Length: 290
Image (tube, rainbow, N blue to C red; front, side):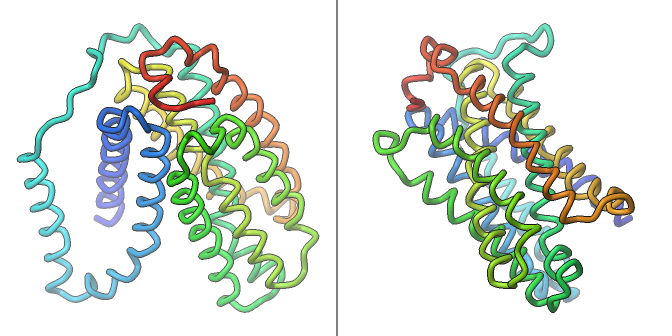
């Protein structure tokens, strides 16, 4: 029953994330990049706050009240006006070259995010023999800094920030954190580096989503669904894959090797954000790429 519940939870998250990324572009076409970045920051912040609700849900009344409240909220959404895309959605003959690049970029990014997010506590508490509290703090610093950075980057007007330069700089920050972590020994340095890793990884996924949706303005639901699926698969690989590999290679060495992921991340980001791809697109000017 727990596995079945988890499967439905996964379906719900996938459908919801796909829909709201599509709506971010549809409703905020003049600032799609900012909208998607802030949207993912809100999702991350809500995920961080969810353990606070766990105590309420553990009681018999709360166990039924919480999903009942969610059901009522979903029913209420049906009464809201429906957003219509500016361009009719046509049929797809198959995966096109650009979505394949974006899907690959998000898949690799998700492996990186899972490597940081799922193993920060183990890296600090087990590999460096600090208390579990320090490990939990390292994990919290990663997710909290990622959420905060997305809010900051999302709040900066397009006229003050080159989205493409920021996008291309992100892999260098990710590589620096992967390379630094195995050499650090102080708890505060490890926590600070995981926080910096959260900042470095914060914009790669939302910017990839924004560029992909800008390049395929008539296929926003289709492309958003592909990228959400790639994110979930990559998260699973990054979270689970490092476990069996530690029978052969230590986690610090795996972090060093993981820095190589940033090479394809940068190459893909360069191709995805090329101005000539978005220059003639209907939403390119509105999105504010440059």
